Length: 211
Image (cartoon, rainbow, N blue to C red; front, side, top):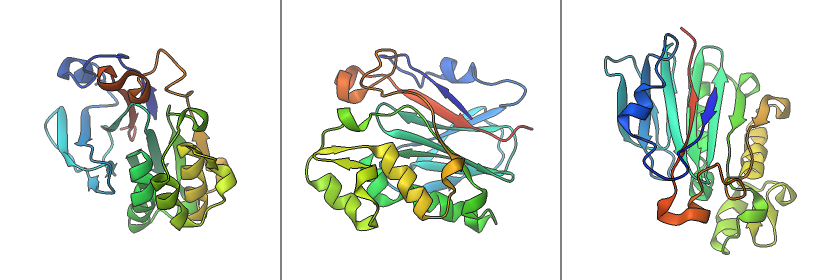
């Protein structure tokens, strides 16, 4: 699993930036046109070095050497792995409400990976103190009946706290969930749409099976 930044502004998806990631372990790269939903693509082997696989917010593969990428600039990159299967998910509050991580856990279960054998890492994302929201957000997230003390404080939402609580409710062990990186808004070396608006760049997060 890897997390990388930026640039803080500019086009992070330029082909030259992506092909530079390739090496003897990561031979192909795949990513989505992210739409803040719950569509997850299964990624087979292929010949193209870098390819967008279509609209969606998650990818899963059992093929070694394929790097699965998600792009974020305040939303949470979620990387999952278990027994020869890896997945990458992009989840903002709409993805949380659509239960994209639930869809990912179900997809791994379909590949005979039960929740207790899944390891998860969250990458850099907006923290709860910096994420002020309107009433529609807690209204959408409260349907999961999770402990609000873990993700809601007044009109602020901690997305990584919500996702951890949701994954644990699905059967992922708390000790198998790791948080990597600081708040995107508070860190000038991280890309943040909330802070920089349309000038924001993107972080990428990648997971792959070692060939």
